[in-house]
Structure formats: C-alpha cells, structure tokens
Amino acid sequence: MSTMEEPLYPIAVLIDELKNDDIQLRLNSIRRLSTIARALGEERTRKELIPFLSENNDDDDEALLALAEELGVFIPYVGGVEYAHVLLPPLETLCTVEETCVRDKAVESLCRIGSQMRETDVVDWFVPLVKRLAAGEWFTSRVSACGLFHIAYPSAPDLLKTELRSIYSRLCQDDMPMVRRSAASNLGKFAATVESVHLNADILSIFEDLTQDDQDSVRLLAVEVCAALGKLLEPQDCVAHILPVIVNFSQDKSWRVRYMVANQLYELCEAVRPEPTRMDLVPAYVRLLRDNEAEVRIAAAGKVTKFCRILSPEHAIQHILPCVKELSSDSSQHVRSALASVIMGMAPVLGKDATIEQLLPIFLSLLKDEFPDVRLNIISKLDQVNQVIGIDLLSQSLLPAIVELAEDRHWRVRLAIIEYIPLLASQLGVGFFDDKLGALCMQWLQDKVYSIRDAAANNLKRLAEEFGPEWAMQHIIPQVLEMSTNPHYLYRMTILHAVSLLAPVMGSEITCSKLLPVVVNASKDRVSNIKFNVAKVLQSIVPIVDQSVAEKTIRPCLVELSEDPDVDVRFFANQALQTIDSVMMS
Image (tube, rainbow, N blue to C red; front, side):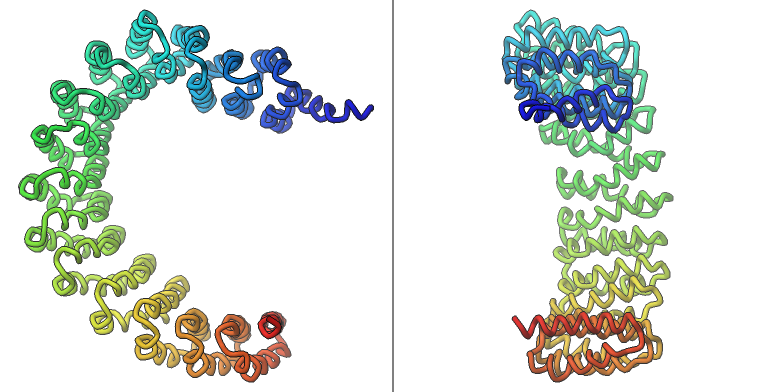
C-alpha cells in the first residue's frame, strides 16, 4: 500500500465496522464518526456519510443511542450552520423508534441543532419535520414531536405559528396517553416561547384540558406546568386560572397527583405571587398534611419549613403548627423522619417564645422516637435551634436524649452521634462538653464494633483541633495512655490508631514526651498485628519529631522490629526505616 493511502486505511476500517455484525465494533465506529467525517471532508460527509446513516437499519438500541448523541454535535463536520439541515433526516428516523431513551436523545440533539440553525432554515426544514412527526401514524413520532415545538415556534411566521399552536392543541387531546403525557411535560417550555396575547387564548385552554385528563399520569405532569405558567402570566390571570387548579389538584382522587402538589407547593406559592392569595393555599396545604396516604404526608411534611417562611409567624402557629404536632406522632415512621429533617428550621421562623412553648416538646418527642432515622434527623440540625433558644435551655432539654442515643443498640445510630460530636462540641463550648460528653468519647474507644472505634479515634482528633492541644493534654491524652495496656489486643490497636491521629495535632513536644513512649512500649507486644501497627504509627510520627529523636528512639525500635519472625512486621518496619532515611536525606 502506498504511503498516500495509509492514513485512509483506518477510516476504511471504521466505515466497514459501521456495518459489522459485532455490536462492540459498530459502537466503536459510531463513537468515532467525527474522525470518519474529518477524513472524508465536509462535502463527502454531507453526500455520502449522512445518507448512509439515514438508511442504516441498525436494530440495536445502544448503537442507535450513540448515533443520536453523536449527530447532535455534528454541525462542524457537515460544513457549519448553513448545512445543518442535512443532519435532520437521520435524527427524524431516530425520533420514531420504540426505545424511549433513543427518542429522548434524538429530540435533545434536534433541539441542539435547531437552536443553531438560521431562521429561514428553521422555517424551511425544521418546522416541516415537526409537522411530519406530529402527524405520524405511530405514537412514538408524536411523542417526540412535543419536545420540538419550543425550538420551531419562535422562528415561524404568524400564519405558521397559528398552525403550530393548533397542532400542539391536537397533541394534548391525542388518543394515546403517552402522547398527552409528553405534551403536558413540554407545555411549560412551549408556553415560554408563545406571545402573551396567545397565552390566555390558546395555552390556557390547552392547560385546562390537561388538568381534567382522565389519566392521573397526565394530570400529575400538569402540576409542574402550574409553576411554569404562573411565572409567565399576569398576577390577576394567575389568581383566576392557576390558583383554582392547584386547590382542585390538592383534592384530586389520585394520590400521585396530590403527592406532586405537596412536592411542588412551595414553588406553586411563589408562582401565585400576590401575598393575599397565598393564604388561599393554606387550607390546601393543611389538607395535604392530613392526607390519608403516607406518601403525600411525607412530601408535605418535607416542605413544612419552606411553607412557613412565606407565611407570617401568627398564621404558621395558627394553621400549620397543629398539623406538625399530629405528624410528630404519625403512624408512618417515614412521615416522622421527613418532618424531623426539616422541623428544626421552623425555630428561626417562629421565634424564641413559640419555639420554647410549641416546638421544644415536639423536638423531644421526636428525639425519643423508636425509629433511629427520626432521632438522627433531629440531632443533625441542632444548631438551628441553638441560635434561637440558647445553649442553656437546649442542653437542659435535649442533651439527656443525646446521651441516651450515644448508647443506642443500633451501631449506626452510635456512629452518627459520634460524627455529630465535634459539631455539638463547637456549639456547646468546652466547659459544657467536659461535664456531659467527655466520658462518652472515651467509652466509644472500647465499643464492640470496629467502625465505632475507628470513628471514636477520629473524633478525638477533631476535638483536639476544636479545643486545642492544652485541653487535649488535660482531658484526652491521660485517658488514652491509660487504655494502652487494655488486655484485649483490638482495643490496644485502637489506641495506636488514636495516637497516630493525635500526634500531628499535639505537636512535636507532647508527641515525644507522652505519645512516643507508649508506641515504643507497644513494639514489645506479643501480638504481631500490634507490632506491625507500631511500625506504621512510627512511620507517621517521623515527620513530626526532631531528627535526633528519630535516630535515637524510633530507629532502634524499628531495627528490632525488622528482625521479627513475622513477615508482615518485618515488611512495615523496613518501610518505616526507608521513611527515616528519606527524611534524613532531605
């Protein structure tokens, strides 16, 4: 083969692979279509490659998905924006396939191409494509068409715009629920491109049809459209057309629709802008908080703080707080958990007096809940209440419950408490921490579960960082050193881990005088696991201490360990000796 033809050889292979029976080879070739296009040049890509791809009858969804993705970024390879229309035929074919993810990707690529096309080309090429898909016999093409109107509409002349609005209206009344679902989910995007004069006349009538659809899967998508339309309409139109729909949806016979309203209610309130009308939504929200379906109550409970923020504290106390009290003893643990995750945020909204009188008893009941997630959700947000009621009241009321959780039989609950201890420490202050929580932190070092012991060692390090080395020297180090002679080797290993974490925080002097002797002493332990952990700890301490200490104390200890009968002990001891050598050299 001549040298001129050599660069084209791989391209010929890639083109052949596009027809190969092996799906992996076809995929490989499709993902490198840009390489093929560059080799062929813009004109041959337009005249040969794109028609070939249009006729390609690949039946593998993965290959079709890759093709739909590649074509979306193909404009530079066909000669730029003026030739973008040549990419439409293969994507139009992909919009009609059965696999949803392929159609969605083809629509996404068409939107990307259409948004870059010149206005005249959109009218000449893109709008006819949308009309063809919308009139397609098979429902898949009509589903895809719904996602393209917001690209086609802005460039169309007035007459064509009227036709497009009429076609969209027909799609919203299609016999197939899948088409109506697609029309409902894309209505917000289409409405954003429609002129305000036609919003009231055409779009609102389409919207009202969708809100009365017999399929709940269509109605629940119309809930999302409420928020989108609310931002486009004038306030008076919002009150007239959107507010009644939201109120009706909150009483819909399908729990899925009510769930959607509960989930979106805060956004819907923002869409219905005038303040007085928000009060009209309070009864709807109260209904959702008391819904007979747990899923609806979960969604509504999760929005309780956000909803209270748009009301006055008086209204929140009068209307919402009674429901919150009911939810705190709800039969569903997931409802209580959802409430616990947000209820602490109500404290700043309601103010100090209402928090002490009304919320604090609810917090306490949730802290004593039998379901661990409920208890944890309360503890993780304590700082929000602390800012409102102050540390003294918080500690009197909530701390006994925290101490109880620290000894919970579920180890994951104990683990979560440990992870919040540094946060509590920073909020409660050093004096309070020493009295109430200090003993617990040491107790966890001897827990039966490894994850707890590991977290407890990390916790000591974070506390030393929070309160400083002097505090740690008084309250942590003596107790840690005392535990180093524990008869159980697993607890002795935990202490070694704690020492390696504390050494960088404590600094060179305390490490040399207090921590290092304990580690060196542990090198004479009868358990090999302890000895190779000693080698690891000494390796981590080397950069902290002076070179003289490394030479006189650490090296002899490691040399002795490097002659140990156990292979692992020798390995880690030699690694640590290499670290000393490299530190000395540097």
